[in-house]
Image (cartoon, rainbow, N blue to C red; front, top):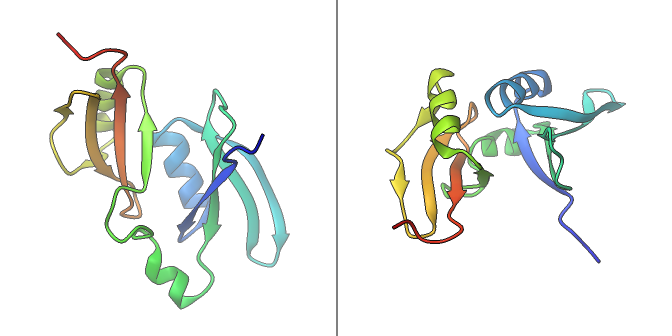
Length: 133
């Protein structure tokens, strides 16, 4: 059965991206190997691997560089699913993550929109098993 393996995120610098995502999101590096001059295969994701990962791709052309941080035309690109929204939100605030709204408590879950170090929009999201009382 097919499954979603990797999602590419275009970054300015491999090492900067690795440092940011491992420190802020507590992601780990699954794989980091050279592919030739200036190119690497870098997969990162949650320590509790669930089968999919971010593939970091360092921009190599002016067109790619122009899309760093705006790969989805201003829409939320990534959803970081939490099992403890309050804890993760507080930890990310302590790390000076740029939140662009206050947390919202919707019928489906708790959510807050934030920007990563490149400007990509993310949602920190905890889905409810059932609507809150």
